Length: 64
Image (cartoon, rainbow, N blue to C red):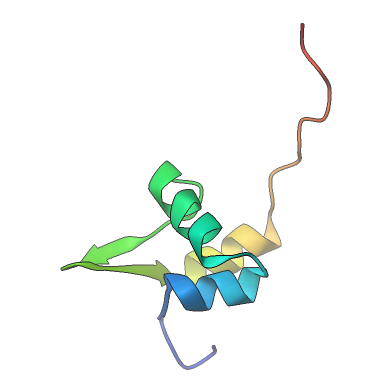
C-alpha cells in the first residue's frame, strides 16, 4: 500500500476489513472520501490513513 497514492474501493475494503458493497455504500454516503476519475472511484491513501488515525467516536446513547 505504501507505493500507491490511491486505492480502488475493493483494495480499501480489504484494508478496512469490510465488504466491497459496504465500502461502496460508505463512498456514496461521503463517509469514505473518494476521487472519481472517469468511471473509477479511487480512495486517496492519505485520506484513508487520516481516517484510520483519527476515527470519530460512536454515539452509543439512545435518544428518545
